Length: 432
Length: 143
Image 1 (cartoon, chains in turn blue, yellow):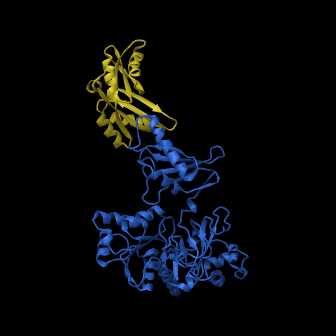
Image 2 (tube, one colour; image 1 turned 30 degrees about the vertical axis):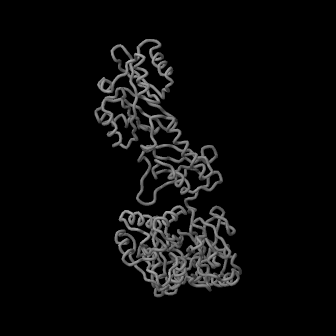
Image 3 (cartoon, each protein chain N blue to C red; image 1 turned 60 degrees about the vertical axis):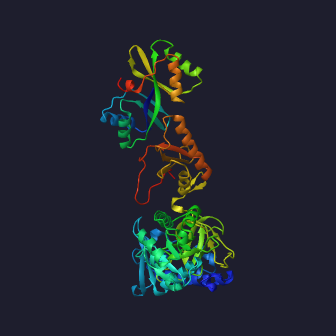
């Protein structure tokens, strides 16, 4: 099922024409109406009229999260406050939160792209959708909510938490689609198993999972344990919220609603645009946002774009599952390494605690990675050679995963810093 | 014939050995024998003390990684070639010694050596058979 065939199955030519017109309008509005962009455009030579073709977008400067923070709270808005009908914020865990403002039409757009997303997960007006994303300033809850309304399905606005109640309602109401983070889906599966619930007897058929990075192996786990189809949803507050892109049943990348969001992939090093198929940082430009037009927003998310008609019939570009973030990407002797790759390799080994630290140094003009791993009771022995064998095994395993030799150091348990929020996993001591 | 040895994982960090020894001192345990094996990054402190369980608990409480395993304590004639004669027994029986270290104290006129072998019981039996005194654990702990 496709929600909006006109938009989602457009020919390349038609789509590019539409995108160019909308891009020019967006840039004009932003530079004339948004206080932040207005200030910035005074310093730059490029005018919206310089945009003659889509690729001219690369002449425009990027917008970063720091820019949005500088515009806190309302300096990124392009319309007077009486036209803003809703605001949301990002979590703000790493500083001042980012504020997003929506006009009535923006909410309409959000509902539309979310309706497309949910349709990819098989939603029709017959479905009962249990929305476990948090309601409130976070965009997850209400974004899904609006999409469900648009489709005319039944929304169960249960929000996050209260696992027992979630499971009760899932059984009593006959929930068919669930929306939550992938880690919560696994938690729900575990709780269902402990409560002796037979997932085969439950009507649940699919789920839209997002708001955090996850892997194919987690997808397989969720599908196996909940007996559903697990699909990937992508979005961010700065652009609109959830619904920027969603996976169809082909599970071959996430379709971006290109008539509303223009994607580019850039090299995080040179900031130059990269061709389709190459991995780099995703940059998004809104094409229809009224409340808060966003020009070349650097998402920091690492992915690649793929074009061509999908098995599902859609022609919209597909982005790969996010494999990392450019702000935690490491470049070691020219090789790109993500801490998540090292973590994955470590956790595949027995007896290793999920606490580790990666230390990057450059002792003799050559980068070196040291991975500190806590020596647990399980891997400790009174014999040096056993401990050295454990260390070598970890080193070999990581080398296989990232293609680089690292030095593993066994450290004492609980000697690495613990954190309730985001743990500091990487210490870069290179003087660059 | 088996004696319990406590091993402690130590990072090569200033003051860590001191902290481990302080923990044992606070538990009021007197170390009977010890050795330290070390590499560039870490070391292993091995200890024989009167109450291994108490030592283990105290060290774990202070966040040390601890393991316990069996060793043999034998009497060795305190004269040239004394230790060599003991090792010859194990060598002849085709048994590998992982490591060994000596006690400070003597048992009568004999020196005491801690042996960590691949297989503890067969090694102890072979030594006994050759007339070498293998000390029972209670005797070792009360030295």
